[in-house]
Image (cartoon, rainbow, N blue to C red; front, top):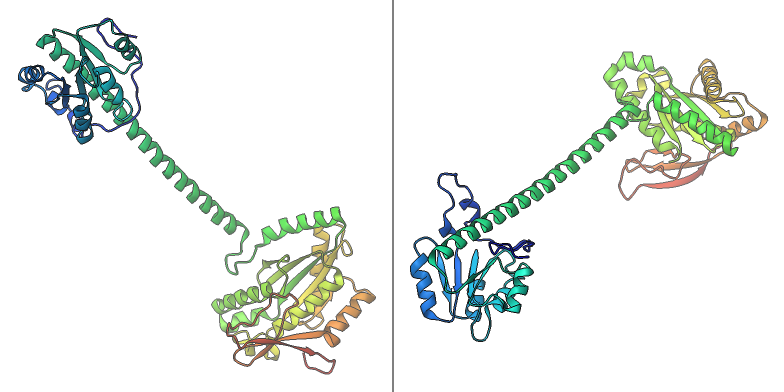
Length: 422
């Protein structure tokens, strides 16, 4: 719709190029105002006299370029950016309205003004109503009218450009803020994950800590009860650890506990859970494991520890470092999580009192005795031969690999008889 001043509503607002000087020209004070010469004006008319008159009247106040046809004007627009285009309506080949319509897609923010001797032209009225033309000027035009029209048009162009720049800045700041929020969110998640791991991990060995073990053990007991599945527990204690600590010092004792933790992790299945119970004690949770299977694994772990070349093991009684292990199962040795732990702890106590370097079950049955005997006398023994030629007994799990990474390491299968030394 056209207003009484010739302005139209609903101007197109798609983003396009603007003159390079637009941003700097907007930095003006109320006293100085805009420098209108920063906003080039393209005048199109097929009559040279009209172009010359326009230049003579406005060259001191505006930056004016001219074109004598629609095609010449389009070429000018391809070469540089303009703020305003003023075109005569009646021109051969391409009318003013046709020319201005061709500029809409490529230069949607260009201020378009038509000069015409007729205001009842149907195409002119349609172009004005659709917002493609900012204003029309009737012939004969006066310099004062043109001057006021150009100033208002430039001010509008500058304001629109400034607003577009503000929107672009806001979008850029929003994108930057979004990126920063995403980075901070990721950092927070990572920090929370580190805190979570610290909360459930033992600071020395890196194993799960006592608190996590208690929570996990209760969940495992609940699952075993719900699905009627076996569940076993091992509690291990390093024999004569005080002697090792007092002789070698606490730092070396810490090294020993770290190496013990790694050995235990390597000796069990991936589904099993290894945790530090406290001091020199460790626990192993064995989901879906019968008592007999847990006893066999405990014997293997005991044997692996006894054969492992721990540093300074020669200072220990017997010249080697050993563990005592207590084994208990749910629901055979207790009806809830706490009862099974107590049963395993009592079995560990009996192993300690019985001479150490041994496995004790919470309450032995004939099947347990048979499993113990098989494990100690007739079990198949996997040996791992390291690169340095030393041999050690492999863990029950298939994940046990030679300590060295050389290609000459291999496994052999042997039968351990009752006459062999432990």
